[in-house]
Image 1 (cartoon, rainbow, N blue to C red):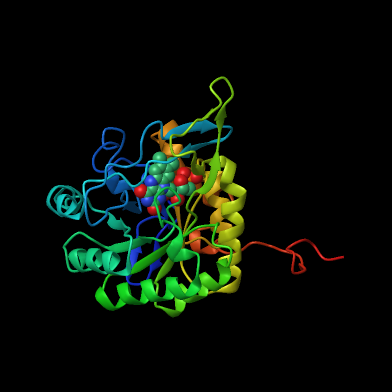
Image 2: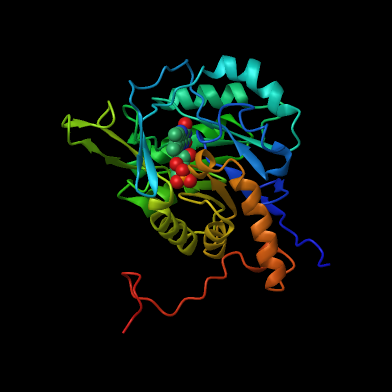
Length: 316
Ligand SMILES: Cc1cc2nc3c(=O)[nH]c(=O)nc-3n(C[C@H](O)[C@H](O)[C@H](O)COP(=O)(O)O)c2cc1C
């Protein structure tokens, strides 16, 4: 029998037992998935976004299934940071895996406040800054301009000793400049990608399927786009990336790892198959064994490309 390949992955000072985690907002808010498997098997758990004050979210209907994906306009529904610290952290603290807390706010002050509340709390390994929610007012503002991204990331970095991952949107038109700003401001990693705005219409009623009209598209439909953004970020900058966008199988996760992703997060797929993360971990090990690799480091970022022109297409 072959020995188990080494899936360990290091980012900043954190060592992850394997590179598989879950995308914010797709894994309940506490123990919803614990009846399927032990969270300890994951490389990390990333929480649903936590905000300063409780939020009830947007009006219903706020989800709609689409070909190879879904639209959501949940609107960051959560019970707020006080409830999170009192009722969720003690639960996660007992679980032997890293907890990455996703936070969002409407101002720099909100983000700084949240970072301050979480700094030094036992059981919190890192923060993910949600600069890219398309479903709330001003949700995309902080990643739409590199100067705003810089200001926000720098302020949070100066507030906390925790590693931070900056979650960006493919809708940031100035993407590479925004990435550069986040890196200059001290982000420890990127989280790519958030959902992409889309919509659907009921032709019988002539009404939009979502009360908010537009929602964020996620799932396999966006995987090639996510892959492209992770590839672009990794080809331009030496920065750790938590990749997400349509990852449902080990094959999907491997595509992201081969273009350079450090961690891979399963999102929408959790709704369809609650065991998806476990299957991804097993599938990655199987792939490494079958191909004679002893560790995940041997394939990370090893995409074989021909010389390309600036459009990303093969030259000639
Ligand atoms: C129902 C739903 C809720 C989400 N909630 C959040 C959230 O609270 N915070 C956040 O940063 N991203 C949120 N996301 C975005 C995901 O974390 C992820 O970035 C995106 O869905 C792409 O990954 P996927 O295609 O694997 O789902 C949500 C996505 C879905 C489908």
